[in-house]
Length: 263
Length: 265
Image (cartoon, rainbow over all chains, first blue to last red; front, side, top):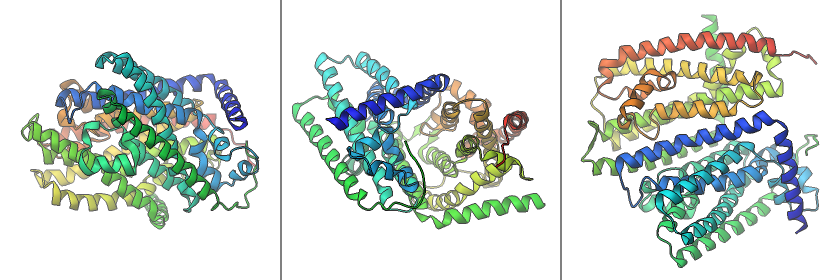
């Protein structure tokens, strides 16, 4: 509980810091939103041209981007420190976090915020509103979607931890970690109808890219309680695996002789 | 001649450095493979639904066009602006600006050097796989080979200029990343990344044809039949944009130099 309180304080402090550079803060939010429109435009236009594809309608693209960008916005926005794990390792900044008595992972995660990710979050919410209108979602479906967004955020956070923790094992882990992470994220942004057969299996169970957007959209469109339970089990599974993997990887860490005083 | 030799040497040194790090190459291959498999399967399904032709273009031609785009992405000249931004923010730009070689030239060479090995390796490997699994599109090789190489080189020069200008904006803006995102997405969409050019609506086709962002990836259009009638105009457009952006880059660079503060130490 104390660790959580500290985490919230950290986030608040970081947001205040970011807001000091007002123009950069606003430009990065607006810039990111415009950036995201490009992907939506591409796949929406694709959906309109091609028509229904493996049960996917053009309007579902709004749902896909709602789920993906909201979860990305929350994790990258408020818990951006996890993306710095490779840098912390290579610059020995991790020492500062290891020496504190609080939860290490939480302290690292809340060590930074990303202002541009707030643009993603805002964009995701707008997409979600469009998704509700275009798909004419019922109240139950809306509530179910919100619950799914929480679960998706947990999965996203968990898999990011796994990707970043890889850098404990390899030299110059920054490239490897970001390579895996980009693969995980970019596959979640494709049209959901593209994934069938073995591709669907790989990107659902091995690299859970589809759990970020495509699967939740399909769940909202065809809601059942057992599907919700499966999603809950998945999110718990990935979170437990991520924390265990991080703690195990942390034991591999060896501080170098770089002198530095981190935040 | 000396300058060309120097440039090639810089690229060679950075490329050798990249070759040592095999994990990067493996990741690039894996990324390219997963991207291509997903997109190619998707479009195979779409073309099947449409009877094998969309807007008069067949599946192999469309896939080759997208494959060329993904190969160009591996070269990754878009990282030039973040390289410049890092140098501006860290202050190391003052060290480079004091050297006899132009800072911009050096940054461009570094960017090319970082991506060229993966680009050549994956392009060759990918071409062999594409010939095996997708087939060869109907091409007039006498026109295709020289114009493809020329449009690829001109497009990358233009891209380096565009991203160079964005990078130098770090002197004038607190954060130039939003500018990068927006321009990058224009280049991505108009280059026919995930939505092939053959599927563009007429208005978007015209924008891709006339805008500098579309001109960066004209090489992706070389596989289409219409290229044989358009290549002179397209190459001319690329040269024209290079001249315009060259002038803009020169002006921005001069202004940036004035903004740079050399503190020594």
